[in-house]
Structure formats: C-alpha cells, structure tokens
Image (cartoon, rainbow, N blue to C red; front, side, top):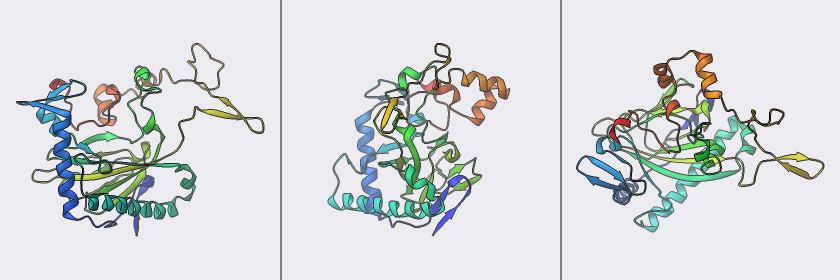
Length: 293
C-alpha cells in the first residue's frame, strides 16, 4: 500500500526489511570513505582531491556518500545479494507508484542505482531539487557538457535504512513532512515539485538513506525530427547574437527574477538557499560554512 501526498510525493511503509548487519557494513564503508577523501588536522578537514579546507564541525554537518554496489572496502556476498534484492523491492514500489501516474511510464528510460547517505548528529540538507546541477548562466562553462547527468532525473526513490530522530524529509511545495523510518520507500518527482530538505539529525541518532533515480534522455546530442526519418541537430543560441534562433539560452533569468519579485537577498536565501551559490556540487550543508574555508 502506498500513501500519496500532493505533488507526486508518496511513501510505501515498511516496504523492505533491513537487517542490523547491513547498517553495520555501511558504517564501516562510511569510515573508509572519510579516511580516503579527507585529511584531518586538528579541527580542519582538507579534501584530498580538491585541497579545499573546511572546519571539521562544518563537514560533520554534511552527509557522507557511500556506494553499496561498489563497496570499499569489499563486503560480503550476502551484502551484495541483499542490495540486489533491495533494488528489486524498490522497483516493485515504483510499479505501484505508476498506477497513480501511468503517463510517467515512458519518461523512465533508465535507472541510476545511486548511493547511500549517512548523516551524523547535526547533519542535514538545505532545500534543493534532485535535477539541479548547480547551473547558472554565469558559471555555465563549468556545467554545460561536463556535469549534466542529473538534469535527466525524472523520479527519485529513497529507502530509509534505519529509524532516525530528526532527519525528516520536508517537502515545502507539497506541504508534507515525512519522518525517517526503517524500511520505508519514498517516491517523488526529481524536479522542483519534489523540492525537499532534510532536517538536522538529533543528538544520539543517525540517519541512513539510500537514493536512486529514474531518468530520461541519452548521451546523444539533442535533435529535432525532420522529414520522414531524418533529424537535425538542435543548437541553443545566445539571444543577443542570434535573436532569430528557435532555442535561446536564458541569459538574464536570475537578474530578471530578482527585479520582478522585488525580494531582498535575505528573502531570496530563505526561499532558495543556494540561489547565490550555484556551482557544480553534490550537496549543501544546512548552515552556511563559507567562513570556514
């Protein structure tokens, strides 16, 4: 049985039985991920690849990514088999979800198995949507053709691996908050209708979730049908240079919205926390850590 809420948000309660040993092996992977990607010197955490330095406290407020389908360190055969079974169970939930939204069927071209996120006390995620890759016109050269994969996300699935105090998923546009309860599977649109935040995990608790996506599109360049069997390449143009083109980049949307809304910077940050900080990043902390670097 699936509980449906506004904006395509839905939850299947106790859809999967999660054994304790799955949690234990994920926590082992979490520690290995920290050891691999971060150098800790006192209260400063430096990322091994980028060299960016943050306060250790600010990094603890961000979830840690682990990949159960590509475990490091390697886990047991039983671990692999359990995650294969979990993927199948999530798929069965999606099939039931499609009974409410059957027109979605042919928008689900492929599936991304995704990853698990482990949140320690105080960790959370600010309001975001799952098909935002940090794009803005200003930083387009960092994004276009380099990290567009998540723009293809259509449907998000989330398995809560364990119970958690705090760590609720709040969907402000749908007007619903769903607690993190072991074995529940959520489905929701990856676009703005399913925008959500994760509230901070309370002391003495931990949040573990497993995320996956169904997407649409391919690696082929965008083309438009032409003739009986032909197709022509679609090029998006700068309207200032090619005003007659059919497809235009939205070069002034940010400033046009600020002007049209009349919102102050504080109002904008409240409604869209990362509006001024668009960049190719995976997750944003609940609190501004810009002074920590």
